[in-house]
Image (cartoon, rainbow, N blue to C red; front, side, top):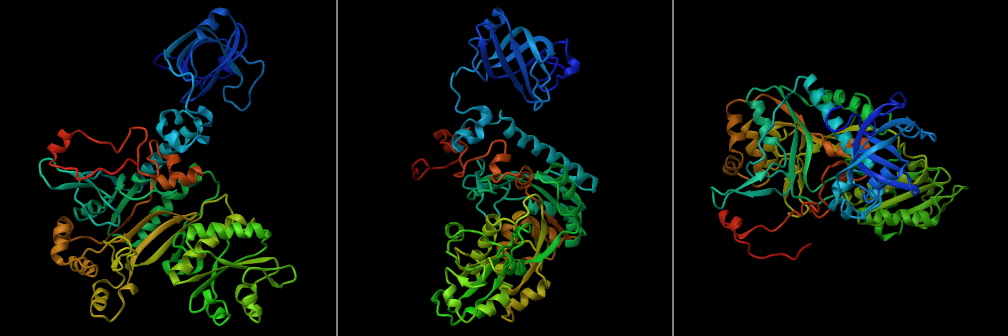
Amino acid sequence: MTQSRTHTCGALRAENIGQHVTIAGWLENVREVGSNFAFAVIRDYYGVTQVVVENAEMMSMLKGINKESVVSVEGVVRERASKNPKLPTGEIEIVPDKIELLGRCRYNELPFEINRSREADESVRLKYRYLDLRNPAVKNNIILRSKVVYALRQAMTEHGFLEITTPILTASSPEGARDYLVPARKHPGKFYALPQAPQQFKQLLMTSGFDRYFQIAPCFRDEDARGDRSPGEFYQLDMEMAFASQDDVFAVLEDVLPPVFSEFGAYDIASSAPFRRISYNDAMEKYGSDKPDLRIDLTVDDISELVQGCGFEPFEGKTVKAVRVSDCGLTRKQIDKLCADVAVQAGKSPYWLRVDETGAFVGGVSKFFAGREDALRSLLDLKPESLVLISSGTLAEARKTAGVMLKLAGAAVPGHMDMERYEFCWIVDFPMFEIGEESGQLEFCHNPFSMPNGGLEILLKAERGEIDPLDIYAYQYDLVCNGVELSSGAVRYLDPDIMVKAFEMVRLGEDDVKARFPAMYNAFCYGAPPHAGIAPGIDRMVMLLAGESSIREVIPFPMNKNAQDLLMGAPSAVEQKQLDELNITIRSLEPDA
């Protein structure tokens, strides 16, 4: 060991008894037993070591040092009288002959107890993130992240991929989220954009003659936070392959990911290749979501036809979906709580009925199924002690509510979810286009650079009105694990005519395409190979491996839900001279969030 220590705080064992050593770290705790006797715990990155003070001289050195100060301790290792089998260093302790203060903690009170920091308010944790990270439980997630990134790099290199970094300052590109814009000082009135993804650059690498590319890519999107999405920036295992098909991409990830999940995951069981493939439409019909959690054994059934004319107005003329939950022992109060939780997440309240121990329909909307009991029993394979959750509305509304019903019921009712495993699946055959919720117009459903199933001809048919654009599917795919979308990918088009026609469908002409994507358009004109790629999210992957429910637990310095860096105070105001250099005038100031 170099520096000012002979051992770390996690290194000493019984074989070190009798040695004179030096350790250094943070003073985690002091417990005084008498006027000249105390136990101290020293913590560093590697672990903790107990120090026992037994004389007045050492006690005088220890007194007055606040917890979380950094100290150096020199002394002799001896066997502990009361061993702690829970600690790697639990067989030994150090009797010091010197205690030196290296870095003083000037505060008697801490914002939170270090080893209980996860119980503190998140805003306090983020403001004092350097203290939060001293908690081994928090630090271990960051260590896990480092190990996972290393393993992924190693695996991708072994599969023949070349790591290439792509620019951070680039041009604005319509890729589904808001850009972060950076004013260009030398070009007044113009802006760079931080990349939402290295999409264009990695495709340009394929046109440049590189065969297999990857990088641990930083991506920047000005979008709202969720439990599995951090605002601002995130990282992904970005990859692209030349002369490749959808199956080639699947084969690589099905070989790379299972060993990583098996080695680093919180659970011992992970899907092996080949992962299950589910079409987008089948996923929405069977699971009410394009991110199904296959650990749950529940599915969605359509009962629209069966309920028409039943006398319950919310069902009439609507799409009606049902989720059967067998062996459901929930009380009425628990059912009401489940329905309330569904309403919060889905935006619509579900309906329900129960099948009691005799097989009779009771509770909820059961009276509206009078005379239809046998039909519903047959359709849903209903058994006594079953709960039926029901959604209705437009097709999209009914599917969305059913998906939430399935997810929450699977977690709430014992026996329907196998928590201790990682279940992967591919969602394939996504629609090429969709109607935008805000615009009400045709928009790209996924990546705009994806090959339509049917190529140029299918786009021309849509243009001529022979088919509905919403019926065009693309060679797009998502990788889903335990209900979390890990990544999206696609087979790309390489014909500039397909590129132009695809963008014409969303009201962007050839001149617009050439202006917005000049490099891509021109590169395709010089001959491009077939290529495909994908980009699993590093943050989400580590979140799953660590068994965390919030992505912020696996990011070293995350922003809060409002895209604020409470540690550094960003975003922040800047000096007027900086604005003047950039030719920027602030029209109005919004109140502080």
